[in-house]
Length: 111
Image (cartoon, rainbow, N blue to C red; front, top):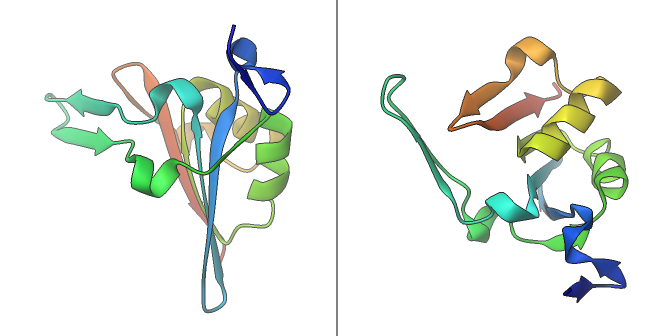
């Protein structure tokens, strides 16, 4: 089994990308297995690309990703594990979760 930073790949890691712009901290997190996927829902006219350019950063545990998300002014989350954990932590309201092809997607902004 492949390992990443001493953790097994099957442990359910998250890609975490952090970008800074003026006073903004943009944190993008996705479950590792959804990176690079194109999620489509023709009925809702939605096409969402989990673009590696935007989402691929360091691999972290869900707990580490949540800690980094608490520093964000804007958060972009894709995947079952990270969205569920963010809802449980109160970062995302459950009604704000969009599901495309069975994959949860959520965003937040702190004003």
